[in-house]
Structure formats: C-alpha cells, structure tokens
Length: 140
View: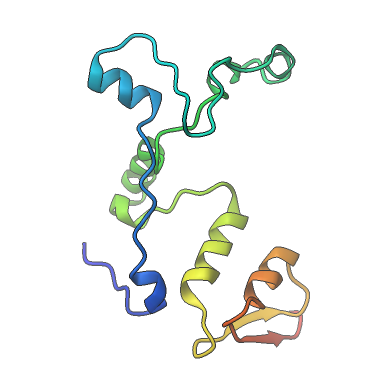
C-alpha cells in the first residue's frame, strides 16, 4: 500500500527513524543462544525486584526488558483483524502518546489544530507547541 505523506510536516518526512537494538528474543534466535543478558537499552541485567514481582505476578517474568520494536505481533494481529496493512498500525504507550505523535507530525502554523477549549491538558499543550497554530472551538 502506498501511504500519502503529503500532509506530514517536511521536517518530519526527512527524519531518519530511531533504530533500536535487537530484543532478547531476536538475539536468542539470531545467535542460537539460550541465555542472554543485555547491558544496553536501559535494561537491568539483575532482573525485576522481588517487590515488583509480588505486585504484578502474572507479568513479572518479562517486565525487566523492552518488548520487540514496533510490537510486530500486536501490529500484525490488529492489521489482520481490520484487513489493513501493518504499516497502517501505529502502536503506542496509550492514547496520549498517539495523540502527541499525530500533533507533532501533522499540525503546523499553516495547518491549524482545532481543539475544544476544555480538553485533555496534554493535548492542549502539544497543540500549543511552538510552530503550531491552534483554534479553539466551544465545548460541544
């Protein structure tokens, strides 16, 4: 699928995406290792604290490392469920991150953001960022 990037700010279109290191799962698979201890990516080689494990027992075995970049399994499942391409899925850490990303990528002084006068504070902050033009509309 060809995505239309004409509405994306030029300085964003020319961005080189961050290229993360390999996940532990990717390292295991690529090099045939059964045990991997990463010292990069802000990961803790000592693992998760016992207090955290007690609080989140169901997920404790995996909370000390980052998930695979781009969440390919989740993105693939969403794409299949909605009959769209994986490139059209944007996983994020909650709706706030997605809203922030959309505002950063799309709105400029020549392409104003319209928001309600009373809205989520973070959305208002991003919409008012330097270089953006905001127009408030009355509460519906």
